[in-house]
Image (tube, rainbow, N blue to C red; front, side):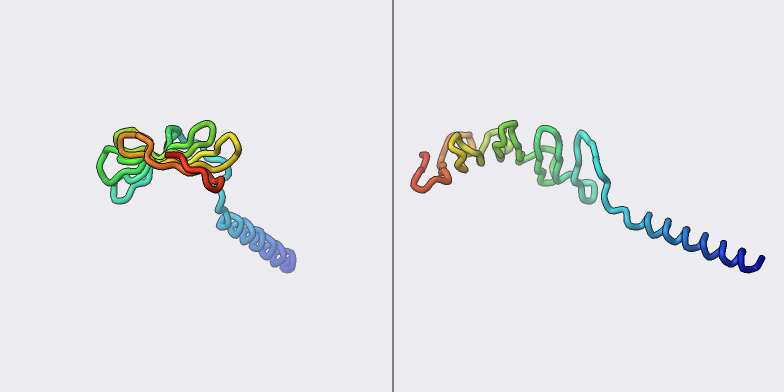
Length: 120
């Protein structure tokens, strides 16, 4: 009888250890759904990720920059005046295109990944 008790206690102890060790190794969430994610420090909002893009704050309630990815894959950086100031795209020839704009959204400089092609 004593051997059976010792065996059962040992078996149950090992089972509990395996269960506890398995619980501490959970590091992945799998699938997470959210309408928005806020980045805060000491209650001050510094970033907001939503379906409209990534908004960057300077500690005030008004976003001063926005990172936007369009449906066709263009990446745009938008200033506080809602003007695109930087764009990164893929053109029809599958070359990379970089465009820089002034604060009013007027084209200032552009370049494709193909050598020697400059867009004023």
